[in-house]
Image 1 (cartoon, rainbow, N blue to C red):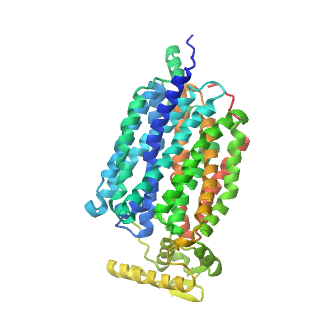
Image 2: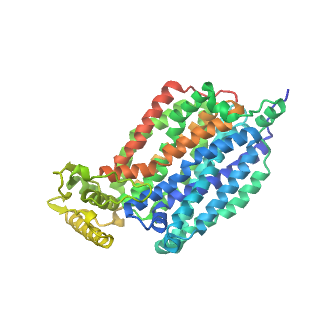
Image 3: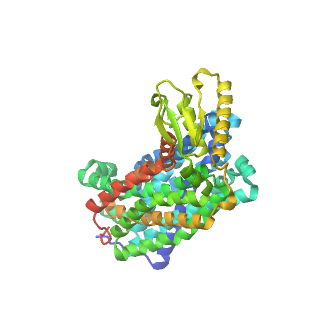
Length: 546
């Protein structure tokens, strides 16, 4: 009977390097879009109102996540039937060409509605590719790892993904500093996308020289490879139950923690607190680089102390500290705004029947009632407000301190009149805010960058702890013959759907409710569910044989 021979240390190091290089490239390409969502919204969705434009940009960011489970199904099945390496090479090629294509796309000003259509199409290709990448990378590495060191070796793949996050922020920061904010917003945003073609060539070459997984080769030699891995993974209850537990207790948790810490935090700090984008990119570059070694450290610790207690620790601490950290962001970045929110609360009094959810995934909704106009204006200004019931049929009233500003009914106006009325209303609101002590923009001299950096470091350290351990536990739950398929689907549902849609959902929740912290309820509820499932139904997996 064929046996699996451990690799020599030198060959194992090369394998980890080659697999990590591909993961760095694909994760860099996929994550880069999130760093540039505010700029992309202005360049590709200029035909809709500002609130909808930003939400649609976030949804385009999330569109890649929508199809990640489809990529997971297809490439997971391919990897379980034909081998891990073949799936690797296809996904890396798709990702590289789609990312390079985004860097070449004409904007809305050049080709109108075709610009967002083409952008979304390329984003979907990215999602399909990444759906087959990450699960395969951790499975491939785990199947080569020596006994007792599986966590450590898979940790290098996690560190590669973390390093990719750093690269995306770092290249954005360098481009911004070199070109200036105006030139970067005009054309410089394309540079981080275009340089990915170099990463594609290098990554493809190193992966081309990889050997197949020894456990997969053993299955082929014994004739035990799965012929219908999807049917086995999702059609048999004993496996489907494991898939559901992995999703609810591990991978859903990983997704919301990662995207809250790495992306929603940025949207909050830039859109609500008005910190300049270049400063945010600099902070994220430093913090994410500092956290790269932690992926390996936490993985190494999990080989000694166990996966489950560390994962639970990260989840519980994140749940407890998330809200205080975001309030701390406000105090550190825009203290004048923090003081004004406490001293002079804002209330919108409106007929509730006039108020819509400020969520427009396709950009076709017209927020033209007086309530919608008042809410969307404050949302785009990043101002928190409360809500009060008004009399039926009355116009919405925005009360700021001792001054009130009456909104208007835009449904009776022409498109040109509506634009002019919006501008005038926004000007009146800004004047009332300034009179009440609300800052206009941000005074950069009052920003406490060390405190901001420490808060962001704490948040991303907690994310690193959760992100590192949950995929290792999940892959150890499944048998080799279906491992690629069974891991990839829940991973990309948890990370892609629950995590990828988080920024858009949270921002829309804030726009509808008015409280700038209200969007945090989404990740906090998801984390709470995962903690219960992980605590009660998922066992320790550290010493399981693959």
